[in-house]
Image: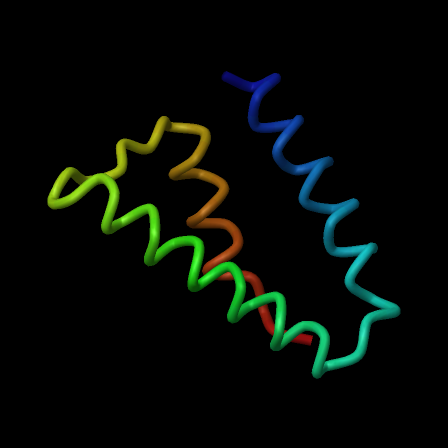
Length: 69
């Protein structure tokens, strides 16, 4: 589980670094695309809820409490 959490932290750090040179408009477009993908997945799976592992929950908790720049 620790290895998975480390992997998620490193990959998300690289993803954040990739977003630094992108304009706000491009970020907004990417957010809209991700929201659309989420809506499609929710329609496909119906009322079934997503199951999170402990590493997923730890990562989501950490990012939700991180201060905004």
